[in-house]
Length: 226
Image (cartoon, rainbow, N blue to C red):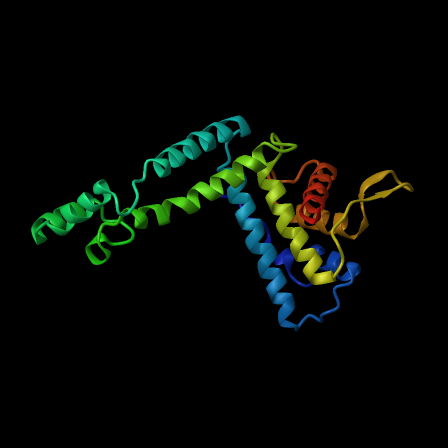
């Protein structure tokens, strides 16, 4: 069973909202926006805890990702054109099946999408399903080739979400602020917000190096604007 954060501490009186109000969030306690933000933080925290619990070491993840990506790309490259002899033979063979044969085939593959009984068995329907997987695995591969690829992937994704929540709630850009006064690299409104969220997370799921996470977030934000 997964540990759960004390989600009541994400409410109006909790440290996360205190940090947001200090950063400029001006809605009152009864504004629907408060409930929306509370739900967004709680949902993101649950997802993060689950992501950490079921994560694998980065090298293993990259190996599995590249293997899956290569298999998808090989499959797409092997698709015949819709008007080819192979595609046409596949379609006609399916349409030539009697009802009992079709039921037998679909019974073995109950999760077929789209349902070939209704749409026909067209090669481009399969391609339409597979290509989004090709695109997203290519995007993940690109991310993995970048800086910090052995970092805390789950925490980075969580901080990405919290950065969006912070900016939407306060109108301020989430950024790293270094305090010369106490040599704190995680000072400033966004750092205080992350610390407040981190304080609520269960033991074993803390952020760890917040300074590194904020630096990584800032680097990704700059790349998006260039």
